[in-house]
Length: 160
Image (tube, rainbow, N blue to C red; front, side):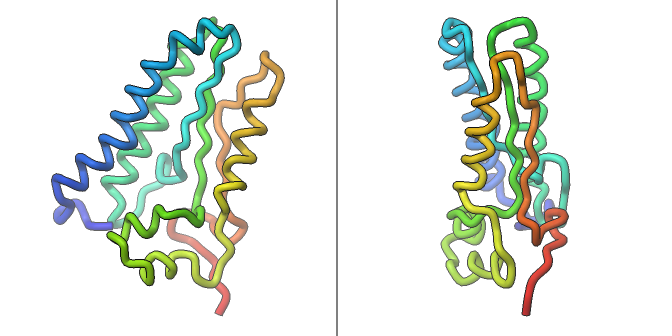
């Protein structure tokens, strides 16, 4: 949540190692098996932060923009091969994400979801399950999923 002028090198490295390096390494490792299966499917979990930005989010949004770019590039690189590629890009999901973002401050993390109904991990999993169960000739390029109470990364309707 730090502005660019204040973000630490450790936070930058962690965000990129997890969201970009890990994704690239895992995908590279599994591609031969997916192709050999004759019916592979790569599903990357992105975020609405992959196509929106907000103050204090440059490190995270940049990493999620990279996930989006990797997913789109992979789709082109695998054209003609028996591997589908999907990105699921959720908005606010009630997970440990906010606790990590606020460095273990459970109170601050809970405030993110106050007065609104966020998505659940099951909501996101349902989207993944739907995408991977389409007929083999159907590729769901992307799914954007947000709570009804969220219009953008920063526009959230909250009840009193």
